[in-house]
Length: 226
Image (tube, rainbow, N blue to C red; front, side):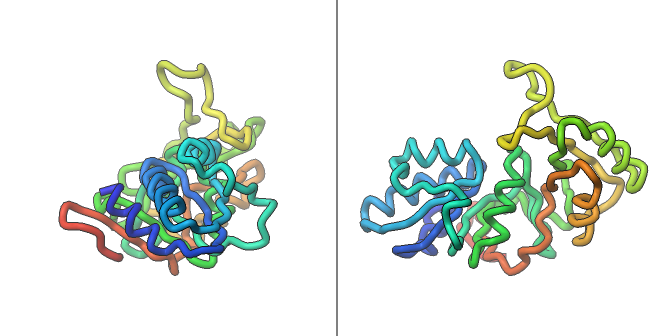
């Protein structure tokens, strides 16, 4: 299904576009398909990666000459990204891979945003089965956790690297920590800005401001639009 979604998303790419490359396994499939399309069609594109992981994937796929840093472009025509969960009212939850801040920098500025995901990620309300990621300054993580729990309830946990990896907290590409918050109720659009207003919060995995995105979902029957 990831390959089906990737092929459909590549249809949005045109010669001369500045394209944001999302992060995650579905976005990786898009990067691989894009590399084939660029080679076959001879397209000239500029690519902006949303994580070190996606940048490395683009390099491995032969797209290195097309890569640019976000600060080096004056527009983003198209961004193709995945999502951990998508609500029926077209909000997204991202950050399972820890890249939501740079994803938001790129995705929110794209003239056209295409979200590609397997259909099982569609939920009635956010969050469904995942916590809400909150990227925080390392010095503020415990203070932010207390603020969130006191105001909204629920439970926050500092994300760690898990077994077999680096000991201690997971460090984002930006050098920050991530809190995973399991709220007592569903997220609402204003929650994105309310969380960001807490001193020490960099950004959150709630994407509530791109309801104009093209959402492509895939199941065993094929690709369809939400």
